[in-house]
Amino acid sequence: MNLFQTVDMRTGHPVTQIVRFAIPMLLGNIAQQLYNTVDSIIVGRFVGDNALAAVGSAGPLLNLMLVLFMGISVGASIMVSQYFGAGMKEDLAKTIGCCITLTGVASLFIMIVGPLLAGPVLRLLNTPDSVIGWCRSYLTIIFLGIAGGGYYNIMSGVMRGLGDSASALVYLLVATGVNIVLDYVFVAKFGMGVPGVAWATVIAQVISAVLAMRKIVRMTDLFQLKKEYLWPEKRFVSSLVRLGLPSGVTQAIFSMSMIIVQSLTNSFGEQFIAANVIVMRIDGFVMLPAFSLGTAMTTFAGQNIGAGKMDRVLQGARQGTLTAMGVSAVITALILLFGRGLMAVFTETPELIDLSYRMMQILAAGYIAMEVTQCLSGIMRGAGDTVTPMWIAIINTVIVRVPLAYGLVALSKTPELPQGNCAMMYVSLLITWIIGATITFVLYRTGKWKRKANIVGA
Image (cartoon, rainbow, N blue to C red; front, side, top):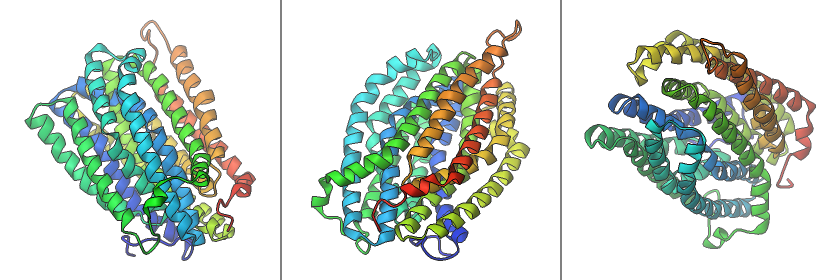
């Protein structure tokens, strides 16, 4: 099985093609996760726990500003996969040209707005004085260099739609290597602190974006990307917005809930903030099979719906979801067995290691549920139904996650714990994941998403 070939998911055994496509993407997601993880390890080891908390506190606001790219990327992947499946080369090229232009506009917007919002929002969230300066500097640098990460992610979405998940992996591995080296040089050697890891990330992302763009331009066997296609046509912009906006809204709602919950997290003090950073970094790796297989199933559904093969889509959904659940069960067991050692990579503080591990144990049971949510949502998105996953996310975050987190913490307050029990933050997250998986499964089984399938009219 050659992983470094474009995967035509319209033929072959469904689960084999899904896994074949997902493996390079999983490796790429691991490399992507290393960006933030190495940042955390370097600043935690060479600067201190406060610097570790600063990098983590920047996450929710950064994710909120990235929703524009999320929307474009999801819409691009769906349209590209369906046009590819239907063999419509000119529309495929025009879609890609539209994505390139819209990404440039989104990058410019974030470069202007992001630095202006960083300081006020961090103060609004009660970010501790000991970390707010570093946090603001980190965000400002990342926002000013956002175009690199934006273009890499959009071009990766295009390549995934074409069945090429391996090229994005290669470019990301190169960028990750650059990021790790620059992190060490800027922080450990030059003493640049938190701004040093931000500059390392920006430089590495620009390199990955240049490599990805170069690959897209050279894929002339699949489409011809002409200069005139960079001027967006209304119908392609409309389709990108229709398909991508719900995913962008989903990510925005999720990010807003994380920002609101971050305020609650900050109330527990710097040690819990640092512990939360560690848990979320490990959690990011455990989630990768779910995200990778879910994205693979989006491409699988898009290509096969473009080719008019709905029975094959249903078969792949069943096989892919069961495979993802099995993989998640194994990884969760490994995390429970070796989690304490993983926590020790980030810090040498025993209390911080113990606190992080206790929080990780609470989340463990929820990872299999997340596989169900990601895989079945991926099928619905590939079919062109991005609205149903959006509503699931709204219910899960607005109605369940945020009220539950604040409610459980409030109920756990005692004279000994005047701020409440910090473990309730993770109990609320576990309950949210399980409810989300249940809702997703029920809505998938209704089959209403099938009626929204096929944007290309094939």
